Length: 297
Image 1 (cartoon, rainbow, N blue to C red):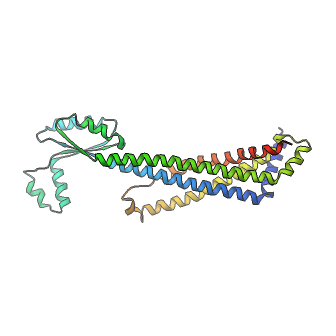
Image 2 (image 1 turned 90 degrees about the horizontal axis):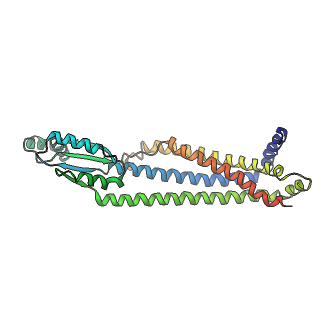
Image 3 (image 1 turned 60 degrees about the vertical axis):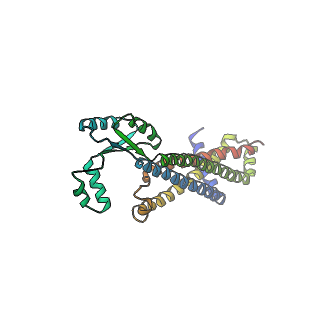
């Protein structure tokens, strides 16, 4: 195909978009609505998973150290625990530190002075795991040490794992459903646009135009509609999410309990390629499929 022909077909596609601007606006509106809902669902589900990830790292394991355990054994054990691939962090709490924390929590500093020489509290390891579903294996490894007494939120961990798995399944179902709905709505809208212009297509066919020549301007229209429909909701989600991030640092900080939302770069980094792929893909493929019926003259 010659360059002049390509330029002509692009021009025809743009002119066709302008001539049928009302239907084009309807198509763009459909894409904007579907992609905006999809983007918000993606942001919500992504943040739920991110917040749960923060919560699960706080569900720690406490391993109390038996009285009389030597300092050398304690340090060696700490290194072995830190070497576990599932362990994120290990903090050693000495007997004195445990007593000081207890006295501060009770609001009575005299307790520290009173029991400093006869401290009833044991030293311990405070252990955080990388993933909550790895907690049971870490606990099993800790129980191999006879001088450690291990405690953790066993029931709460099982409940948390169940909630996390349920949310992941719901996320996949919701996002997949929205993508399917977007595909159906956008394709049907483009088909309606092509149907309105069926006589124009038939005339071009009768005067000898090839299928590719007829189809190309409609594909250009579909791609432009897809780009417009993808860019606008991306901008809307960016502004809205940035506003929510500013709220999370002030108004929502108490509600979130110190937890953070996903950075805007991560959200937009996931949304942009999805939106471009859906918008352009559906615009071009939908146009090509929609016009196929009217090329059979």
